[in-house]
Image (cartoon, rainbow, N blue to C red; front, side):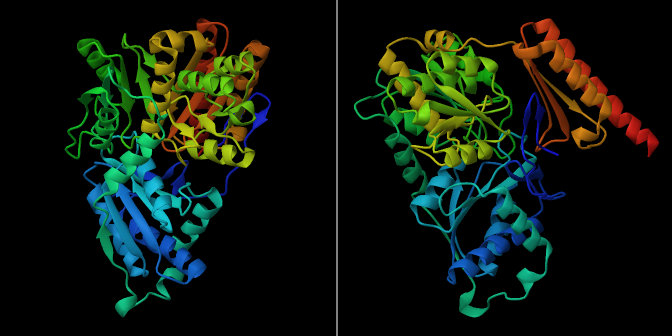
Length: 472
């Protein structure tokens, strides 16, 4: 069960899916659900659905990050698409949001991204975008799983000239760079700014430095030498210390740290301090509120975002709507409610006026626009806009996985913690959507109290499951 449990809030359960998690299929490359055989049939399944709907040869974009196993899955997906009569447009290594953009702008029928985002290099994953550049909803992913596991795909394979073909999109990086730069306000440049750009040896290793340098910044590149095995290794959004050190060493104005597929952003101020997704959302939402550009004066964030973000918005006359963890659920909520800004504390930031999914480069340019117009260091701006409530996140790897409602000790510990916090805090307990971990988040007025409560809930969960294992 991936949906969280928190005070007075419940997230409706998603359709049961065995392959797809909160962000596509993901796992150890060449094992389990991440094999070329699964990728081949996924390519077939998406193409089959497109053919049934449109009765023509679908055009499908396939992109990847810099993992060694990307070659394996790129070939398998392309083969599956061609086997079902689709035509493949190969972009090579590009950020996840670039594939979303190319899919929509080139009028393709679907898009695949081969990436495990922030995971280690030996993992990989596959995400699917629809023709509109948005990730598929749970219901459509469940239907793809049904097709993959059935023999329906094998009944009507095309032959002869009906088999598809593949070609490279040679100008794909340039198309994406132009789209990202177009999101930056006209009349502004980055002239005079020195920026450290950390691409995590990932998908944006070529495009990210070019975006900022073409807008006038002096760029100090970091994490731009991928070798297939070093993606996210000690650099990027998950390891901002490397970017922070470079900012201080080169006396840069700020640092931009991306993750492996560049859909996530962490900013480092001129002192090397981390500015996470909550602070970035607060900064941008305040600007948009003042300019009357934030639709319905509402921001979307997940249940993980700090209570301080909610209070900051209320102080500026806005409001926060929360949703389940995962940038796809942020986007779904934004679209349903007609909103244009949302994101996650982890750095997935969605500006729907400019992109259909989280885009680290687009988000970075929106932050830079605020800095330039305010004429003050980002450290000052971030500090004044968000007063955080103490928060702790405990991740506990457990021997098995059960529905949280069936874990009696855990439920009792959650109820006790909620009673102690009252209206001064929050408790959130959920299973990870991509890893075998229980995540326990507690917010409250005291660091000591929330640490005690979070570790207490995690310990009770361990007792719940160790007892179940012993009974078996």
